[in-house]
Image: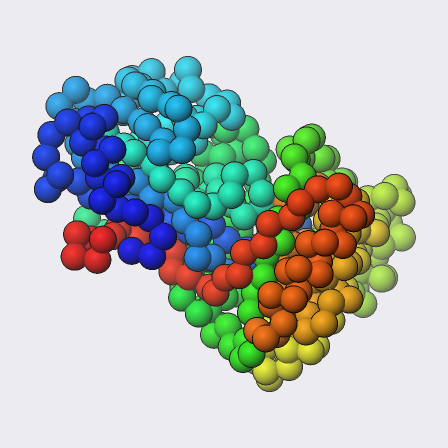
Length: 396
Ligand code: GLA
């Protein structure tokens, strides 16, 4: 296993829960980076995420008490929860995520059983790389399999994870994150149509280029309420459009040309700008797919830059820190495109950087970012990774 020190975790597991190492099973799910297609998963758009080489893993074993006993390697936390009392864990505490999954699995008709669980992860927390979706999906796979599910369906488990987040944790997210964490594939990005959940994989042939993620390390305050506000604005825009054309089911069904014909029906100017972002962002995804298909990375890079500008000016979800990081990256040598990724309001950027320039890129962008904001950015160089899976004893 690449990152986690399995032996040390196994020892910790046995210290916490006792018993025999031979019965321990391990389930993992990665974080994700969205290459392009931002804030359109909940508008029926197409998105282009990839799983990253950072993940959350769970060491687990059934227990005789029929309870969930949860521990996290990096947190001073030990929670014992009765499966009959899951309701009291609703909310945004750390344990709400795993216990919300138990709740959502049971609602969906899965058997669940008491488990000892030790969590380990290296997806930075709250940084827009889907650390929570990764915990949800790893937990969903773990609990489903340990409950006796023989052929876990990862698409179903991603929907169950989204349900946990929407109805138990209380964040009204779309499907992109959970889907990407569940269904990621090494060296590929996912082309996901969020209106139908139709998807396929496109090889991520980046040649001499690498994906460099920049973490603003800005604390994301109010992100959930702003996220919900944007969703509301899109719903208002759609309702206005439907008054003129009731056949429109989602904003991203509209081509830019059709949107131009209909947009005057959106009475509120802010909602009109939000909708314009969605329509154009979806169009950029289509153009990105075409560019990647032709190996035209330069065009893909331009689309990344245009996406950031739109998220800044039309959708207004970037903020000073993301702008400083992405816009500095755009000027750096060897970088062909950079944009914010995920929900925004802080969090991370994604940049495409020529391999021989990566070190200089990190030094240059990091220094300028600190100069502009007073904060210190972190950088992660990553390829595309596999999604959720069990790690068997042979490969630990
Ligand atoms: C968050 C949500 C996703 C998606 C992105 C923005 O990551 O969880 O569903 O809406 O923001 O693209």
